[in-house]
Image (cartoon, rainbow, N blue to C red; front, side, top):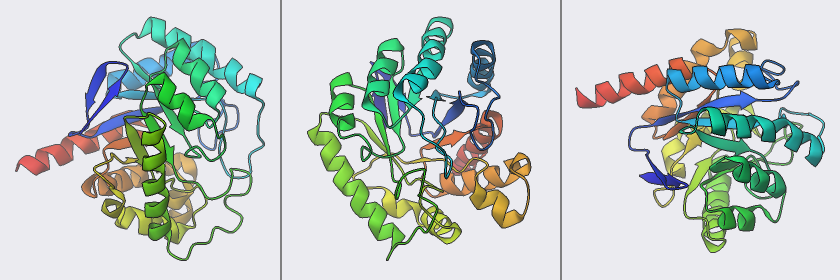
Length: 275
């Protein structure tokens, strides 16, 4: 199971880690931590040292109820950082976390080699065609609604049936648009209740359609801290537990704030497979 990032082949037979680099003042956990160039580079270096294969750069928060920012504001946040990462860490594989095709285009021109779209192309009709032309892997996430309204009353007849249909349709559309490498993200917390999230995690293997890799992002999310009645700052242990479950259920990429702990989970489970 491989994906090609501008000629660099990534083998997902052993699961890989995607480190989150939020360049936002208002993200739910690390808003404001890395939204200047020096802090962003320091965090990038740390995540790469701890074992991240991908650095996922995002300039627009997608937490529930967040206000949408302008295109220019998003570009001004992500482009200087991507350019500097590309120059400072040329071997780093940078993913751009955006639902806007113009941001995806300019980010790839600046050095990104993957597009991570929380809307799976539903918020920008040009996204799939743009990614196909860019020739980079595409992460298609499922989201019910928009970040502004997704958690108001998420409802499904059967969340797993809905996701399988969404992903089957999205794979076909992506291939038609010329996208060769597509990765699926169930979108934990994006238009899902606590029960939906755990049903998806428990049946993750059922979403592996046509051998397509699965990325999961549960890092420090409310499905952990609300269930355990703790603060988000205390949700690392719960994150590691759910990442471990996801790996056992077939996840190939873990998108996380805490790279070291996720990488350790991968190493331990890989050793267990050989026992």
